[in-house]
Length: 220
Image (cartoon, rainbow, N blue to C red; front, side, top):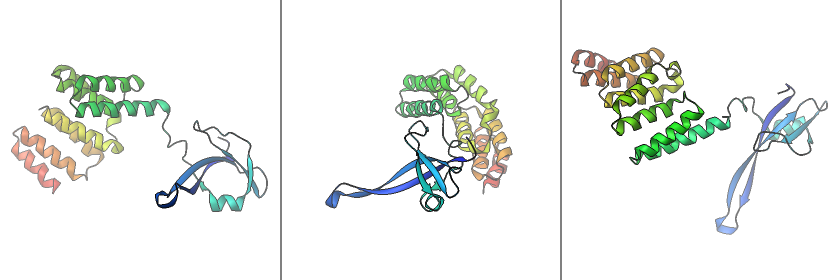
């Protein structure tokens, strides 16, 4: 986008309903603002649901812009593309089916997500869990092995995912894989006591009590 054209947010409070049932609701609208319109005047255009400006531009003063609008410099960076949103929806449906023990339906939804993004961490994990729950242990282990080789998994912002991954490996009695997973995770966030606790538990279930106690002590 042209450096002179930026995105701003305007919030307005409107009242819906009547009498005792009325309530205030905040409406958010995003505008493309052309800062180069005139010396003390800017041009604004409302963005539609596709994030495209539409309608005739409106001229307002820079003072009004500063008072009533909030700049959103990361607006487009923070938005997910439609494919990512659809994949996320499939993952949510898959997790819902899994919680209801509908493992075939869960796997179908996770596969739908993977068709959109084969590296989707939650979809891969969900598919592995679904396969394992159906008794397809060999196929599930292949998914878990593939996950452990995905470098994208081992980033700090994915900590909740690799922690869940380690728990699933431990629950499936894949203790060596779980231990390797937690070792990678702790290299990224060595100060997280939860990782030490889960690593200690994996060692405990593997009957390595000395290493278990060592990690559990670090968790305290």
